[in-house]
Length: 390
Image 1 (cartoon, one colour):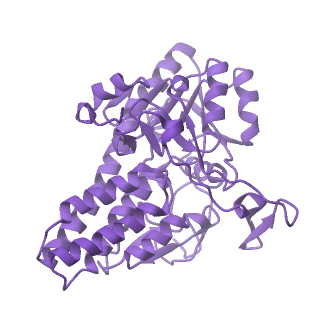
Image 2 (cartoon, one colour):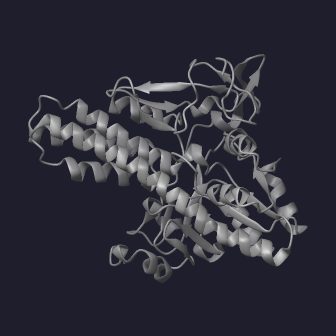
Image 3 (cartoon, helix red, strand yellow):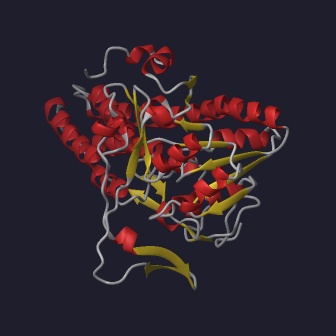
């Protein structure tokens, strides 16, 4: 592979600024320097492939906040690695001092993106494992091992989600006798996790099984993660797709051109409410109105067992107005910021919305598919029983 080409067969060529083979994971420990965590610079895709070297938990906090990495699973895994970097910074400290420093680093990481529950899940898991360890070498090795375990678990869970979701696509294909048309929103692909993804995992599994599918990918303004990331991923993998404007979703459903909607989730309540990228709620209501099954695909780390009311209880991240009043584009070999509104015009920029459980046909997890109800989710995850408020 030349330095300026992507190695992924059949995919569009992108500028590779690293001079190395593109990674097959979104975030990982540097093979040459274990004190460095590397991640794919997702803000530059699909036009340019670059990587970021991260050497502290503070840098990881900024990487997450700035959406260099994004997606619920990837954020959680990145936070796990961030706590490993925090543990490296406690060398020379005793247990009490290290615990305080780790708690402070964890609080900063948790504050970087408030909606995705995977982030706090990974941080709290690391803090529980590291608490009270007096030996610095043991502390660092424990944090590294757990960070790698969280990443490996993410891969395994997404692969299992793909196989469970495949059943839904198989049933529609058998009933329809022709290609299955799937709609998705934002990016819940491998870039949003470590590998496979959640919403895309059943699509990849169906494509590999020879089931004809066609995917409608909504652009997902304002950051265009559907257009820039999901469409790129699927195209690389040879999955037939059509990119659509966000506002075209209802028209396609109304005219019977969508068999199934599958989206990801950044936080799902134990009662089945689903928080996902802004615009998901509209697609769910449209799907319900037009009799189209609507599924959310997610690992157990995305389920919040302490929360029942998603609309009232899930914090919704608000981002800067410049993401709405400008758009990142690629022109003449470099990225530019193009204005989409007149100077001085303000904008609201909600990152997520919540789809109430009544609009969700089912939740695809690594343990199987559950209806969007508390009893159904508890049947898959009995360890969550008794943890919800109220």
